[in-house]
Amino acid sequence: MPRPEINRSGEMEVFVRVVELGGFSAAARAGQMTPSAVSKLMSRLEARLGARLLHRSTRKLQLTPEGSAFYERATRILADLEEAERGVSSAERAAGRIRLNVNASFGTHILAPLLPDFLAQYPDVTLDIVQTDTVVNLLEARADVAVRAGPLKSSSLVARKLGATRMVIVAAPVYLERHGTPDSIEALERHNRLRLGYTRSLEGWPLLRDGTAMTLPAVGRVQISDGEALRQLVLEGTGLARLAAFTVRDDIRAGRLVPVMEDHNPGDLEEVHAVWLGQGGQLPARIRALLDFLAVRGRVG
Image (cartoon, rainbow, N blue to C red; front, top):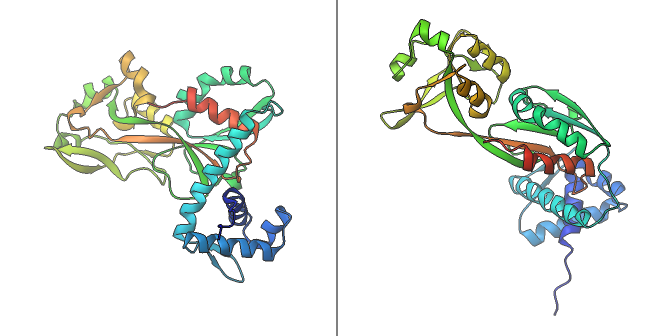
């Protein structure tokens, strides 16, 4: 007996709609279906996959771990399908406002120099940029896209990697003249080690001691939540900081900052991603244009 034809993309679209709208009834209204049809489709999907995707209750739906993993992949697949279809159509043009949330270092060193080219390439697009190192809820902040550094938590966000950057401990020459250049972890412990103070920052500085990984607490006299403000403090000779290489590369070349403790640098990388809310593949042309532009021109290394 032939197997019934399975519309996998259709199932994914309904599943994503259920997750993002928070229930069968809302998903049914959005998809012009009945709630019972949505419920039956979800049951068939779970039976076919052999996994429970949603915990159902009278008050709310909650994703299972398997459901979270399937949601992440489904949103990516649907976005790729949408992009493939729109890529052969000239009917849609990039136009409208993009609300963009970026961390301070990326905004200053990567994004700002590229903005003239992007705006010239897409004259009907306007940008509303918020620059902050605080991780915001995209829905609450009404942001279309955010650029985030560091590890990503599992969530309803879709992500595109923009690269990874090496981390380096730096100090201003004037600071090293006053306090000396640390050449061992014991010596480094006596220096003013400034740190970022936002929630996703590391608790200390990863280092190598005799080839073994360890973490040295950053317990300096200043903690600050803005990466660019931290860089300015280092430039002024306030102390040492561990910063992304792309933010201090020009300062090092110009002699304004000096790398220290390189023999103890573990060589770890901090990844940078553009993230946005999964929309079941319905990605507006203006958002897609920005993401494609950043993927090519906004690479971090």
